[in-house]
Length: 339
Image (tube, rainbow, N blue to C red; front, top):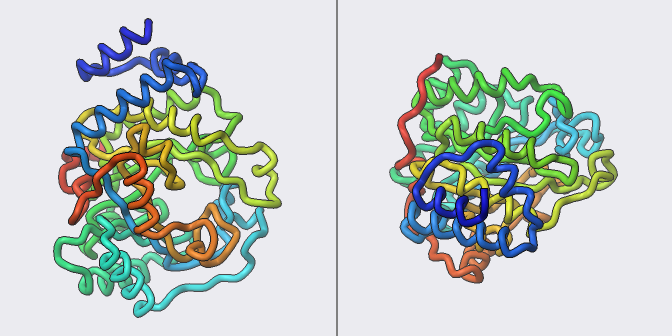
């Protein structure tokens, strides 16, 4: 299949085989073919998002050494980055959420470690939700959940979740892939939109691995998908493997957008960068508090970016930013039913 064939198939909104995705990912990141794919992804993103990108604000409810032991994560017990545990108060959580709302974030996310009590998550969610504007989209980034727990999250005020089956899940952490898959089904069955991503991409991941994961994310009909590179945590064994370039990540972002069904509006990348947004990323995150890619307790003082920074990134890549609540979750396809 030639590049011309690929672009025609994309413009006809046809689905791609794994072999075709591998071909797209196999072009050198700096090649004319790769830049053509980035342009096509940008075209699709412009069309499905009415030319408007989004910024979601995420803050952490806690920080704790995590027994899931994802080797790429600063929270992992094995990485020995953080030894103490802390949780923010409901007053602090409300203030952070309102801060993102005031800054113009299109959605507010709360993140927890696997150690955070589920009952406390529900209590915090209810307190935060009642203080937000009625239209503000409220999302969770939390652990695997049962169907009854997912239903309780919906009742507590969450509209959606971020949940990803990560690259080499079960090999480079202590989470079974089947557990992740079950949670995604539970969230969708409970009426929660699921946003996801192909992550965390490192230099060692093959094009075949990436293509397989892109196909998986497309299969769950997410509110958004996208691609994000692994950020090395200093002093960890995973850091020795290095990091892909922003240009390579932009290529992965583009191929992911091309492969997604058109009803999936959002295409994300992280951390915020102009190459990613130029290649069709329509979703960036501003962050506060603990961050799995940071070795500082308050990421806003180190790696984390604020809403204005993300707006500046979009401006540099000629994107307009949506003014108002996120459209990625309100316009997502109907949730899948549990098999």
